[in-house]
Length: 244
Ligand SMILES: C[S@@+](CC[C@H](N)C(=O)[O-])C[C@H]1O[C@@H](n2cnc3c(N)ncnc32)[C@H](O)[C@@H]1O
Image 1 (cartoon, rainbow, N blue to C red):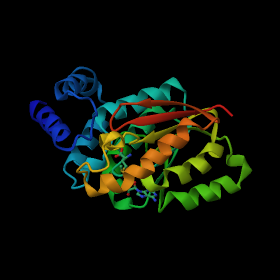
Image 2: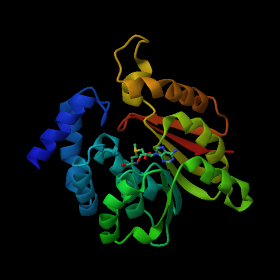
Image 3: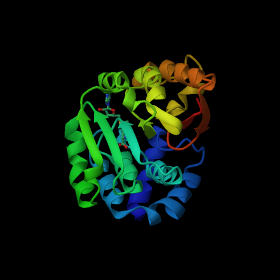
Image 4: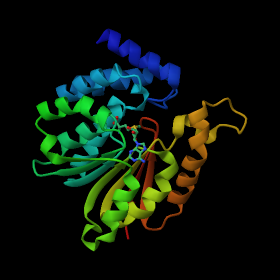
């Protein structure tokens, strides 16, 4: 545990990505006190497998996984969707929270990474809740929107993929989520870059996606069909509760 905690704090310092809290010690305190001791064994296993993968910066943090798991239980979610799976940490947090007959439509352009986590998901006994679709999410959403019976059918949708498409996702997801249901957009504080001055030395990918994130945040703030709550969990999560 000590080594693992050390490296988590180190990662936080290095990339400033897993939590936007201004104190590493405080973030570590949250992990040590409330997250790691309560983390379900399969999630721990998947987190450790993912930590060895070269793109592990993409994974949902353990505290955010715990938050999603709690949220899904609080809203009694049953029919859900996830855009952006990677190795499946948030997917597993979701699958463990849903009832036995709960469903997740999970989409990612990369199946290989999902397959890395799949044995853990299977071992946890929740794989039957997941339908994985390999490929870009947008055309799948277009198909879903075409069929009226999908409208208002999702209790929860988690979006954690290509930031340049978030507004395109939102235009479709708003029809698919039920009134009273929740869409969660991940990375809405985008590495803290949303408040960085124009000449700030940002990593290339951070700079590229920043304007899309800013545009999304502006659009969500004035969208009368939703109530919103922007949380400084992980890299920022905005919850949108559909009200009309
Ligand atoms: C930040 S990662 C997702 C992390 C994941 N939620 C987790 O808990 O580990 C983003 C994922 O989005 C996927 N992605 C990128 N563009 C996509 C697209 N157009 N449609 C679906 N998935 C996409 C990437 O392959 C990547 O696995």
